[in-house]
Length: 382
Image (cartoon, rainbow, N blue to C red; front, side):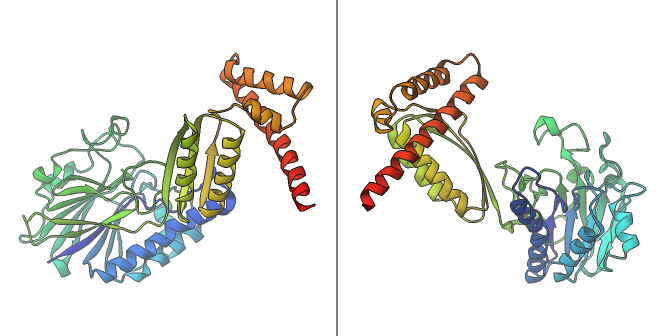
């Protein structure tokens, strides 16, 4: 039974400029390391070929070193790799692919389909019909030519393309690089391996997006997979198995504080985060100084435990209680300032004024709280 491994959207060379440099370097490195995992999986599952449906590279301008390292990462699978360019690495007259050839970096077992056509895999009697992108955006269906492609009788017909299946994906990405939703029927395809959508998505029984194998954005669309495809023979319905290969899990958490017990739940959620999590957290609502202190401590512990943590407390109102203020020994002028900041935070002219007031209130109360805690600690020691 012929078996294929379908993957896409490696985005090798992607930069993570919004992250701490150390985290950015590790996230970028993970994109190459996952290719090593894909090669190992292909060998372990004894697939007949690996099908890579575009966007191997994130940009045409990646360095020569990145190109060489990518092809070196593929060395764990000695069988055929069939690759097409996508919109990020389109087969322009001068491209990352022509550079890879000049560098001599492309191994003999890698078939680069830089022009539309058919790549024959005689050992498994499969014809791979390739629709590479030769420009970043096209408004014609590059898979139209599949319908008329001639392949040997008794061979599998496997399509490989990069684009947006019409009527399937969100409308904002339906405009460029369209692919007809009935292409498997009109072109008599046994399977159509697609790239462009970064999440795992089964379009129909013969067509799927594998998604990116290593998540790279805060979007819950099932990234981190590749697909093992088994086909009994021409005309048979393929068996699709999604296999997780990604390392990092990206989490976008929106948490709210309405009652004091919400603080307990948020602290527990932050404590449950794991070392390979990439997290952004937004906490809204209102809390007193004790709750603010607990949240700050929980965020600090989580920041040390995960790969990356970014948090936003702009919509969390700090409302010190009278007991808080008394404990801070904030009387006279300090008490007046705290009262004014509380009022501006709640009733400021605009969102920016409220944000500045909240941050100032947090800094002032935090400084006073630290001073009180220090004095208490000294007293306890004495």
